[in-house]
Image (cartoon, rainbow, N blue to C red; front, side, top):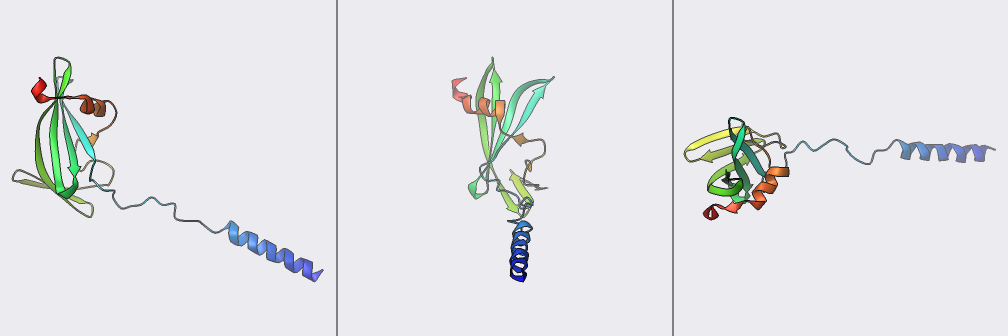
Length: 136
């Protein structure tokens, strides 16, 4: 009887040991994801009508490309583009455009440039289907 009780207690101990152990950490990673390869947009409207979008893309090597989508007679065209520089230090993103340098705190989720949103959905389709500016 003592042997039976001993094995029963051992079985319960093993059950509790595996029942209360955790496989890992469920907390989300607090480190920002990489900006490299992300594209963001901002709408430029006049009297509530969107006439253009400004698109920014954070590329490798600290290159920030900015281009414009422009509408003309119901068609969208990729307008002029510019390249600038950026650097990331922890959650601080420093962007240099011409001779102006600006540093923003980045939360790892939204665009470090205020007023810009992730390029997706309808605006992403416009961007992908836009004609080159020389076809206007």
